[in-house]
Length: 161
Image 1 (cartoon, rainbow, N blue to C red):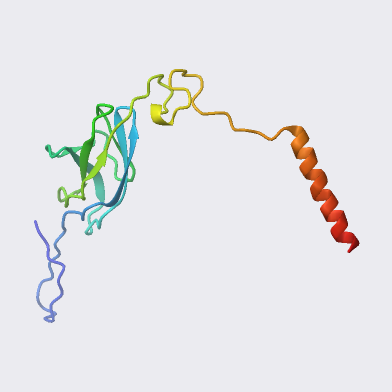
Image 2 (image 1 turned 90 degrees about the vertical axis):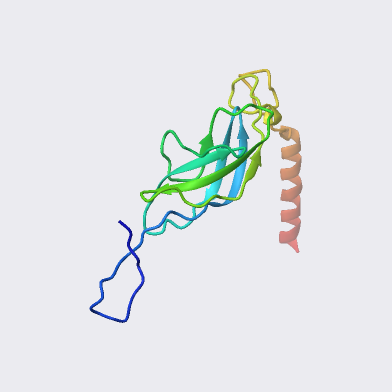
C-alpha cells in the first residue's frame, strides 16, 4: 500500500501518505582491518520509515544485507582478502526496501600477522602478539628536575620584579 503525503486545498479530499526507501549514505570513511573493513558514514534520510539495516556491494557485485542487522554507523564488512583493494557501496534498508546507493569508497584490508588486533602497518611489533605499540619516550627524572628548577627560578625572579 502506498501513501502520498502531499496536502490538497480540498478539506474533503482523502489525504494519502507515501513512505519511501531511505536516502543514500554519505561521507563514507573506510578503515582497513585484518580481513575486513570498517565503514563510517552519515545516514541518509529515512523518509518516515526507520532504517533497520544496511546492504553493501563489493566490487560491483550483488548487494548483500549485513548478516547481523545494524542501523548505525560504523558497520564492518568481513571476509575480505588482506592486500586486495575493494570498492564498497552502501545502501540503507527500511521497511519499504533498499534505498539509494552511496558513492563508492576504496579500501585495502591489511594483514595482522600476530593476531593482536593491530594491522601490520600500524603495529610496531608485527610478529609479537604481546606488544603492538612502540614505547612512549620519556624524559629522564634529572631532566624533569632541571626543568622544574628553571621554571621555579624564573617564577622567583618574576616575583622580585
